[in-house]
Image 1 (cartoon, rainbow, N blue to C red):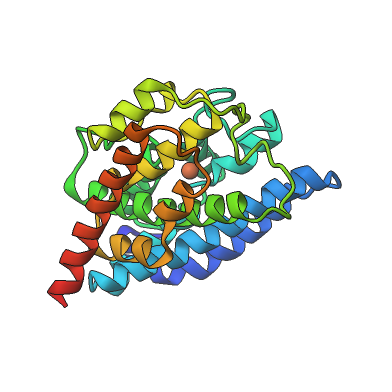
Image 2 (spheres, rainbow, N blue to C red; image 1 turned 30 degrees about the vertical axis):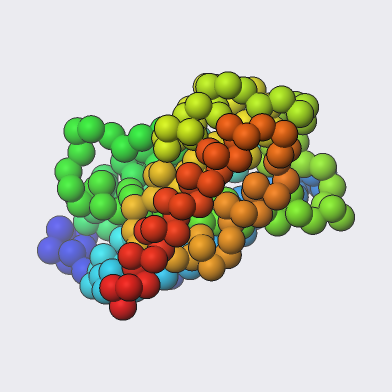
Length: 275
Ligand SMILES: [Fe+2]
């Protein structure tokens, strides 16, 4: 196909790409219920991230083509998770390999985006590769950063949904994959608490316990980019729901949480007052 014929191919390709995704995931089906549960978890997560990104994209009044690029990026952002779980039986990048890099390889090895204009396809590969980094890449073009920010917001919205549902639903079976195999001890690491106190993201390398991981998830609020995302987080009360399942022993911790809530309320409120 000539380049000019591929230029408007994004919207035409999305249906095929969704069908490819279904098929690809089907290939990881397992008789082992634990494996199947985790494959389903990532498949359902992907579908919801696609919905969330369209929601954010609509709030930004994106063109049809840009909305489509955003949706394909969401569809493929976690494509490395299936291979990761199959090979290593974990979703912990530290215990296995970086699932963003793995995902970029999957896209390229399968030629998934061959029907797209090369420039768009390359950008989506880079978005997949970067989406799980602690921070945004420094040397990228504005357009890539824009879509990457959308994927990171949409991704977090759904991870908050998955984890708050998991923490609060006592009927759920213990799932070490969601907890990244972290020990469920009462401890909270000092570095984790201090980062939150400063209004900063918690570094994954500082996370030692499940409580630290919950605090890292509260700290994601400092990595949110779009007004619609703040609105959703407030509507769904995600920060509160994580705080509810944390030990309340320390004043320092409470202050760190209150700071995150105040930040959320400020940014969600700004949005409301703009309407
Ligand atoms: Fe991911």
